[in-house]
Length: 86
Image (tube, rainbow, N blue to C red; front, side):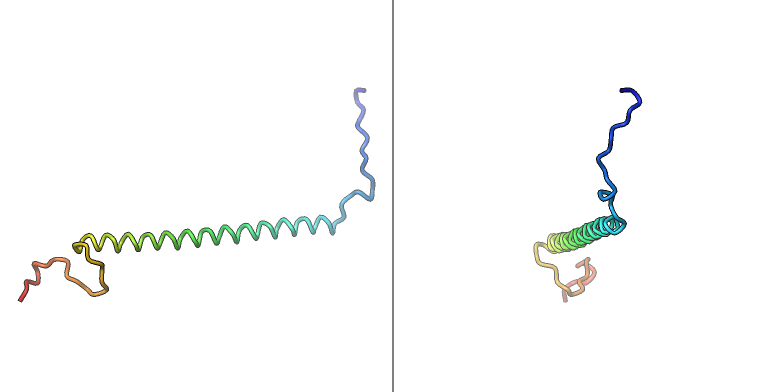
């Protein structure tokens, strides 16, 4: 049995056509594109959540430094002794 090759059951009609191969490549490319879009959405969502966490942390830190009061949009002098009460 040495040197013998197995007989293939493939016939000419079983060979893929160029159209079916092209369809397979297109299908694969579509799936890769869809996956890339989903990854992009995940990155965007993660960036938004990170930014919201940073903002919340900044507000909490500002409130802590302001004696527990919420931060306001007014400009405040960070050194009260520089502007003594009148």
